[in-house]
Length: 106
Image 1 (tube, rainbow, N blue to C red):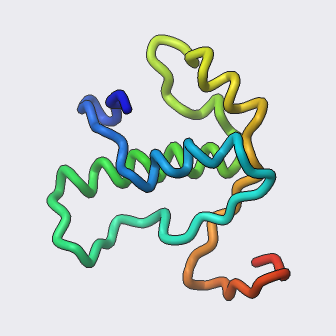
Image 2 (tube, rainbow, N blue to C red):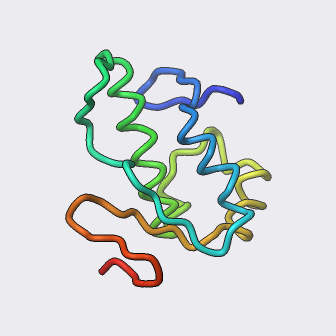
């Protein structure tokens, strides 16, 4: 996958971000677990944390249907326009909300 720019740096998207983009047009609904924040338990470097924060901003925009808030350079690519039309409804689930099969987190 191509790199993306965030905060003036180029990043190669994480596997989690790539998975989101893979399933986004294939599913009706997606629940995201473990996306958000900047705490890590696996010894990530500051650069890795900056990448994670940048990815989380894009994920949050997608979750909120706010594709226009994503910084596209120079404009939104045709692939993103295609994906926006076909994108699943995305919900971020964090530790404050219990997930139970068949029930929605509030």
